Amino acid sequence: MKTITANQKGLKGDIRVPGDKSISHRSIMLASLANGQTRINNFLNSEDSMRTVEAFKALGVKIEMDHTSVLVQSAGWQRFKAPQNHLYMGNSGTTLRLISGILSGLPFETKLTGDESLSKRPMKRVIRPLKEMGSTIESNDDMLPITIRGGGLTPIEYHLPVDSAQVKSAILLAGLMTTGKTTVIERHPTRDHTERMLPLFNGNIDKDSNHISIDGPQKLVGTTINIPGDISSASFWITGAVITPNSHIVLRNVGLNPTRTGLISVLKRMGANIRTEITRYEGEEPVGDIYVQYSKLYRTELYQEEVASLIDEVPLLALIATQSEGNMYINHIEELKYKESNRVKAIVDMLKALNANVEEVEDGIFIEGKSRLQGNYINTYHDHRVAMVASIASLITDGAVTLSDGDCVNISYPSFYKELYRYSN
Ligand SMILES: O=C(O)C1=C[C@@H](OP(=O)(O)O)[C@@H](O)[C@H](O)C1
Ligand SMILES: C=C(OP(=O)(O)O)C(=O)O
Image (cartoon, rainbow, N blue to C red):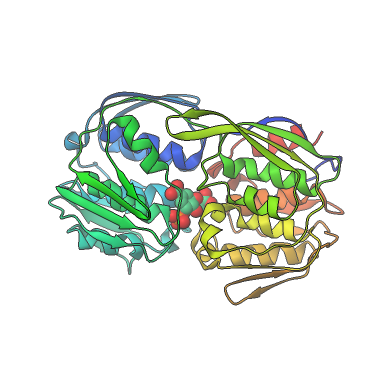
């Protein structure tokens, strides 16, 4: 249990958030697949990203870490060794889905396990296309534990049935190790960090509208990666600032990849006082500053095609909707049921406990605007994002918010509570 008693005078300051989680995972993966040495700066040192580091060490890659600086030395994916034990994926869906693609390209057997939450998350979405490519995969009814024996794959052309960057990346990474052209076709754009990072390692990838193709096998070469701040972590402060009177903050050095900035677009539509400025590019990733102030907000709707660009920020959008003028339906969010917790249920339970008027409806959530929130005990379901959303709510609740589990923030944002104290005081 953890009780949050945030000062309610508004968020203020120049804020720097830790490195992007999605880019951190991919940097270790591509550096390990590559030949030679890769230096990674501003790596996210959190439980999820460490699962990726540990997994590639177990495959024989040399990885040294000093806080947020990582040095990877690899002889390339052709030299990976069968791990001595099963690979433990912890709570990390990204590690699990993406490494399944990589292991499918390798001619040995690996068993993958994870924590209770990850063991309930759907894997059929990656098992199906990887089996179609020729990977041998045994699972517990399409869930963990999974055993993969890869190698000798054939390329496929695959229409993604869900808007998932994890599935897209798993197939592309398998394609990298496969002779011939593998193509993934997206319904709506999803985060494209894998595609943007590959050229830095001398890899080739083609994008033609919603068709993304990779011609394999490819030999990657080590490089230097500077990871921008995580827009998903920045979104907690963005939300805190727009809903809490007297707030004005600047977030520096944040990744502004358009496949990730959906919350900012939706907030602008709602009338928020928010501005972004791209100051540089790190490789192909735009990076910059975000200026945010307390704002009068009006209801909007969420369009299906933009959901993927704010998929991890939907719980924050729900909190924002409780403070906006008018009532809101947040629809097209079925995918939230398959995250670290059933986030649709977790959000509804949390906002109800905070005294908001919310209901789960078909394919979404109904939220009444302009609610006065009251502090309460919140079940986080051990979900890092639920814990952090409830903590941000405490900036405006009458009374304290108590979390059933506070430690889960270590999954993606270990310094979160320290920063909440710092920027609200
Ligand atoms: O590719 C990634 O790094 C991620 C993709 C998203 O998952 P899906 O691909 O399941 O939508 C997102 O929710 C997750 O936090 C990270
Ligand atoms: C869904 C998330 O991550 P993952 O799928 O990697 O567990 C998240 O960080 O919100």
